[in-house]
Image 1: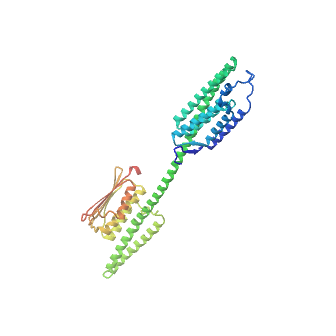
Image 2: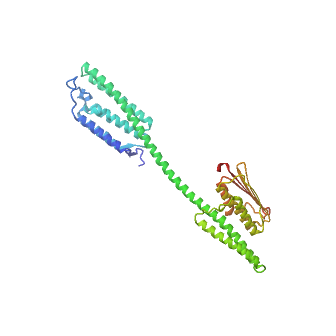
Image 3: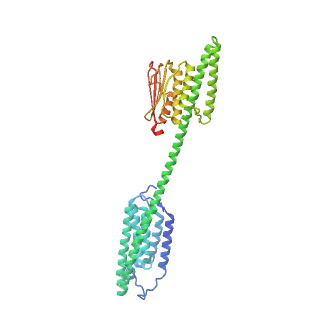
Length: 421
């Protein structure tokens, strides 16, 4: 509903039922005749119509008080929630109904204070804290005013002793009523605060579920990329070397069959390794490329394979002061492997230098060749370069590449070790 006076159903149905039960009980007490007091043979009339029966409005009683009570009870079914003016009008109508019920109906005057308690309860559901405090203060003020009015009416009929006793009871009842209003206000604030906290928690849980789905999707994407990198770095390297061995064997098959067989045997070994890499990749890529080797030994094996494939023995300078975590060993191994694969494919180098050192909580890897190089602005979109960069960034490191056509290529990797130790 887009109306300015938009209303909603009662947010706490159980509280509405309690209101009706309270109204039903107090209405029954209004129907039952009041008992005689010891200090007076007949209780004096404390309503306006009891003192001034000639008023025209008194001819409508008790229907007016009953109708006011029924309307007040039914108003609890709907509560204004949007417009401030609708909330004010709603509260003013409630106060008028309470005054009508209490001032013009003698028997209904006994349920008069409970209507104020219901008024404060409803105000807590439609107003913010300042509005709740204002309605509570107004309710207590009106109660004191009507109590004083009744006291004045009582003085017109009762004896001095009865007046003193009535005054004492009125003061006590006012104090109890004031404390009751404060208790109701505090209780409703606590209930609403708890409900607000639950709503915020529900919203937070919903956002958390959305974030969890996003993280799950992101994790799935990252896992796919990781598997792609592993296949590219392991299988791609083996197949590149295998293709090179087969090409060499074909060239030597006519002129030097014996040497060609050596290259074919090496190609067979590389084919077996590629098949093993494929099987490992299918089994969620849990394969450890180092195979329980130290990083030094694994790099030595890569250098030997590179030497057999290209006839170039890389110049390696390795200085590791302490052992590295497995994830760093694997990343360094894959970066070196991919670099040597790229040199084999595109570099046409005659010299390769590899330097791996640890200094002051930092790991530095430098791979440099004197090949033909490439233009950084055009050839940095390959999967191999992305794979090396992603592996470095995943460890919080820095990946730099320096190359130009005819000037070789230099790859520098810096990985901080302090936060990973």
